[in-house]
Image 1 (cartoon, rainbow, N blue to C red):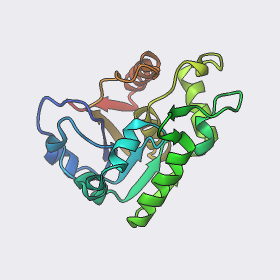
Image 2: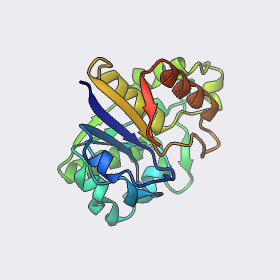
Image 3: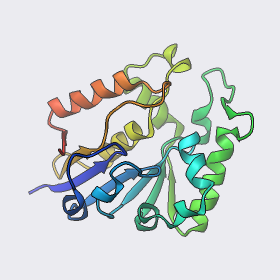
Length: 204
């Protein structure tokens, strides 16, 4: 019998999944859980942080994030992006905003805060980021206009570490919409392909 992994997005849920999540063998969450956070229990094996944009800047600016249920329960924090991966193909860093500095600076700050809280931090290599674009079918030309979400990289990371013969991977709380720059259509198609192949399923 395969073990159960639940990957929890930050979208709205239609029912309380707390018991299912807390009884799973593995759970993954993202950034700062908001919508339906009280319907997904507390178990958190891995908390994935974007660490390159506003979704990470906002919670890191408030001490309450470090004392949140998800962060305190997390056994490991994974940064979806390597500092170098936020560079454009021509090597120029993309600034986040005039006042908040470069994305690479926030990766460093995230490492400092998470490490100081006693959490293990894993940084995904730059090649993982590049391979993710390739797997989505996003061409190098489109990399200038589109970016991939932390949700996509988290799911991809989980699939790479949880063998299909041993794990049943379920998703909940994902809508694949939001920030304009993300390649949502490509990510939605990628997930549908994984569902069709039986690699993942939706928990509804």
